[in-house]
Length: 358
Image (cartoon, rainbow, N blue to C red; front, top):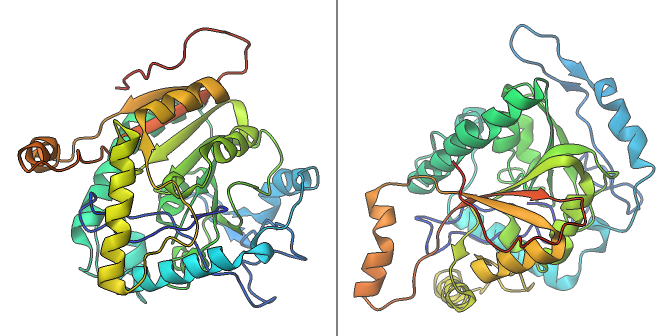
């Protein structure tokens, strides 16, 4: 998914057949690639036509003219053209793992059915969980935002991968940008061709986004935030791009009560990759998990209030902590949905407590 690290790695040990991660990609090599940056600078790549809801006229690129105009005011730095050797190796490893897991398809129907059906039949457990997360997000978080706004939202899908989330948002009539550095034809941004140009696509890193300040109502880290190498930098950049009353949503990133448990999970995962694929997939130092003390630290340092939502994944999933205790294993991750609201005041009240959502 997008960032100095939209590097994702394959299936996580705690997430059925995998984390269903964000997507990262090898450095583009062809100047003719339509998802590429121009002159080593971030470029906003708009499809020529962004379709509207059924029965409504489609939106042309001119519909997004205000966005393009604002890009000239954005600080520009080298992005995809400045991929380090370590990151390049990581992205190549990532592609190798994802292909081995059976991600992607040649059939457009496969992409358009996600996350509710895996028409390939290769990762049904993982997509079943992703579907539950999305449905909960759609009903308990997105719908209230739509009701309050009474107009289409400007949404940035960070770590968009093959674009399934952006597609779902576009079906609801929103203005969506899908961002990632994984440009793969089957599992990255190039796969968005299967959705019929319903949303804009941009290749970029999420530590240095090619957008002006205060451009989005909603930023979604779609199973991607845990690939950040520094949450302070990543979330500060997200805050810059959000409007003052905008919301940040984190989907499908593993959360642990203690940092040590997340570190143990990461070590186990790299060992499993080494055994299964002959690579550790650790060429860049992604954090790979969230933990409660770390979330509290981010709340204080970035002035963000977190709200926790807990989707129901079934009895077997929620019995995992008890099973781990009996087997004397580390506690498993929780896949919370986190909604962050940045405060733009000088209030000194304690923001370290994490409230519960609906």
